[in-house]
Length: 276
Image (cartoon, rainbow, N blue to C red; front, side, top):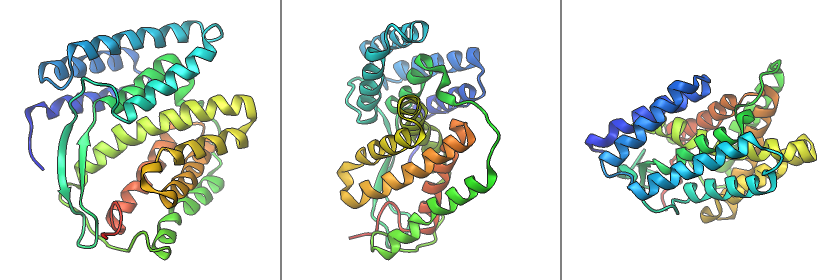
């Protein structure tokens, strides 16, 4: 792990995400623009890509203003754009590597970690186009949520039984960096796309179970590079996150459940997988 002078722009980006969840629109826009300007200054973002982002934001705003007129195009455009950002297929971003061959414990596989600038932009694009992304607060069914969380967290010891993980308690020195990155840049973006947008869109058409199962299957499919077992576990975890979102009506609740699962994985089990 090392220090880079551009790292502070991700702190501004994190503040923009927090402001968005707090529904402070002016603060969100100001912080987001500041982070992008800083990214250009530090050569983390090219001017051409910044221009592309501006055009995409304008399209997202038009979708918001005329949702019925642009709906078929909107769904395809927003999903494809978000996936392209997730897969780092949009050129012009220089994400900051903060961990290289890091090891959380002696039995864990080494891994690297980046502070991504591209992936979090999916959240802002979706939110601009679809204000209902953050959900609608409803009376919380605490027993159902607790049951869902217990079932969700049981996936980790199940992975131990299947030989994919081992118990390994560790608190690496970089845990705080992992926490900030995973919570605000990874979990927010993934929950925004799969729960806030896809699940809600499908639920409006197919009902809760149709929306939940298809969105969760798509979430699992996103982990195809990790093999069939990882895809299955990601699908099951997606069902858990989707239920939390449905039961609470709040996207931040699904984000926290996703982060809690990942952080528990880090400190109690081999992370990201058992060393081969």
